[in-house]
Structure formats: structure tokens, C-alpha cells
Length: 111
Length: 113
Image 1: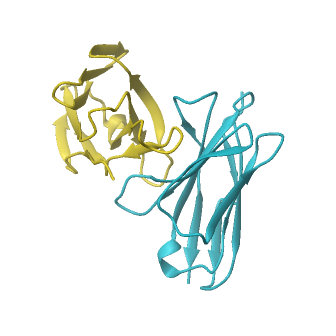
Image 2: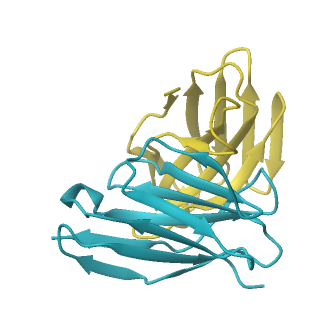
């Protein structure tokens, strides 16, 4: 079975630009969570969606937004990019609240 | 923000030895605990989950939970060089939004041949 997929793999953007990251969960999984991981730190929670509804939001500014589609895939949008947004963005899927399985991540570099 | 603490390491063990990785958490209401392995440049991989006090074994891995001491550990028996990675402890705290996981910074493990 296919695991969690994310696109793109790598991305380079300029300060002030906007970016959209995409995630497809494991087949049958209805919950998607987004995390940001900077070098040397553990992942930090950004959003969680379950059955297309936002179930949780971490301590990130309003420049970060997300949504989940009827097929349970998800997008994470970040507006007005800052240098500090450079990180590995991870999507995790779960069948229901519980064990989360991560995709390969999108590495975002803001210059 | 409730804390999840791990020794950053590196923890160095010889091949074939037992590696012991530790994690403490501050929220007594925490209910679910997970260990992830992350190789350099890769994403975290779930290796163990534990929900009740005691030990849980899966192959060479044993997770141990002591809620009274707010302590969770991971033992890796017969350590192999391929086990060299960063091990992340993750905790679900009911006060968190949804089912968000709160991660420690990870412990770097080096298994030397």
C-alpha cells in the first residue's frame, strides 16, 4: 500500500512570496496533520484536520492556513514567507486520532 | 506549552549492546506515547506506541511507560549500526488541540561496529 505522499519534495522561495504544499494520506485514513521541523528540533504541530474539519491548530501565525478536501488530501498554505519559515514540512496521516504516519516531507528554503 | 524532554546525545553504544533512550514529560494528563526514528535527511518513522504502564515489546524494541514518574523509555536490544539515527519521543496531551503530538528534540544514537 502507498504511504503518505507529499509534493513538492523541495522548494525555494523568496521572502514575501506565498507557497502551497500538498499531502495525500494513506488510503482509508481520514485525518491529516501538518508539522514544521527545523534543524535540530522535533516536529512542531501546525494543524490537524479530521473528516475535512479543522480539529486543532498550533501556535503559528495567521500566515499559515490549511484545508482538507473531500478525498482527504490536504494543502498547507503559507503567505508572506519569512526566512524563519525555512524548514522541513511534514504531513502525517492517521486512521483516526492515534498513531500518525509521516510522509517524506517538503523541504522549504526561503531566501 | 507542556514539555517533552530528551537528552540530545549523542548516545554511543557498541554493536550488539542495549541502547537505552529516555524521555520525560510534564503533563500528567498525557495518555498516549510514541517513539519515532528519524534518519538524517528523512522523515520520522513510527516504531513504537504505548498507552498503559509497563513494557511493550516488538522485536528488538521495548517501550517502557511509568505514568507516575512521567517517564517513557525505549530499549533497543542487539543494537546494529543501522539503528544509528535520531529517536524522537512524542506525547499526546489531552489539552492539545485535536490529537496533536508534542515532540521532544530527539536523542541521537550512534552504534559503533
